[in-house]
Image 1 (cartoon, rainbow, N blue to C red):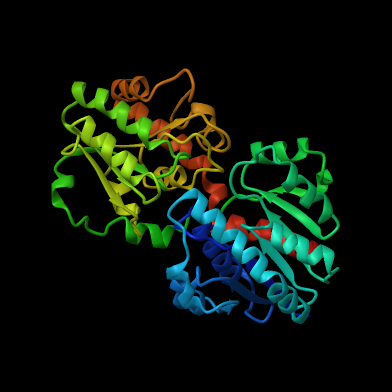
Image 2 (image 1 turned 180 degrees about the horizontal axis):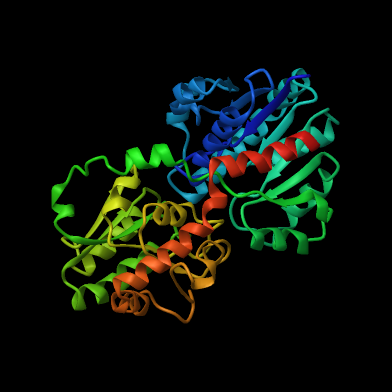
Length: 387
């Protein structure tokens, strides 16, 4: 049997959920494939973004391919929207011929593209390279003329489009760019039971948190995650329920904005921005409730993680994913992001008895089995074998 070569392309500048999606996808392929001889997996390290994961990738027999010296990563502008866009644009043009030459040496490969997807699509299409593209939809599907033109240019080279939720698949179909049989729902590989069960029992360094009831929010400190609304809602919640504190895990460009708002509301001793945390599970394990205030998701990995850790979830009913994960409200509380409120949802949560809360969680847990590494592997390997 000829060895299949799988290339992963996912350049990123900050800690985002796509990182774990890629790592777990690689791990799933390697773990459940019959032998290492069936698949050769390479992760393209465009500007050193994957260097911190070199050891892990080595352990699962995946090769890290450096395009530029990884040491440049720490010098790349990234701490604002404009800086990050400038950096992506710069590497877009610097990488065109590097990518072309690399792909020519790896002809007949299957390339799974997550982020900055326009570059491989254009390179493969314009130079007519023998590369089979699998386009992974990551993030919100917005009306974008330029992106749609690029997708139409690369239509013949894009063998499959994979979507993290049914709602996203429906939105892609409405664009009328790809054939229906090419657009597939492929759920993110989020659940890894052995790893999670070990990590969730790690100690939280600040024991004071364990003495409090706390609401937990997880995600990058960006406009998308809408933590400003969560903090402002918590001010109201805190007045009625002073025993609660709010913990937010994540880093991002809105840190100063959120910090200033916490100060203006005099919540310094009630709201804690703890920054990026590698192990979110230990915080989920002890949380009283998890709240997702996002303006949009796809699908919402932190919600899935919370459910697996038996936490009750309150989430905005935003596009795309929360409703699908929470079984249209049967597995948690969904509130309308425009007309609903976090405060009202929290009050509803407090009124639910423990038996009913457990029923919500059980319902949600049944619904997240599709986000396991094994289910992801089974779906992905079908795509790979068809390409």
